[in-house]
Length: 171
Image (cartoon, rainbow, N blue to C red; front, top):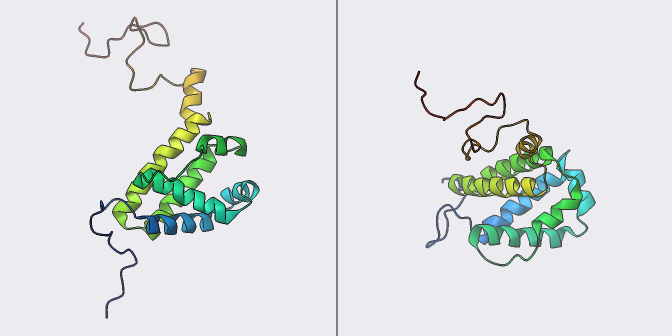
């Protein structure tokens, strides 16, 4: 007899990359079981969360709303995270644990999708909380402007005033 697949296929009629609500619930619970015992994240959660059952229900609604567009979450993640004193190390650790847990709990395609979604959410939170290290460097002038923008008006660079067209130059 073959062992049963720990990652059952998605129900008929759903996109293969989307976990269903039961899978999201398993993921959220497994992740927070792990995060609560983590050396870096555990103390943050223990200080911030009084009622774990209610918190887990809220997080399941959040992830169902994000991943399945369920519309069941009502809240403000930015406001919830602002008073916690988080830094980039917290977000990197959160994302690493989320990825590891997703790969253990979900089929590969779903794990990849929830990881990419978590990356975008984490990036938005870091920017909104002003703890994105690249944004700080750009604001301080220690890093070039965002790469999606062209050179500043007039074509000058930030050092020495050299003109640059960004293309091949004739001599």
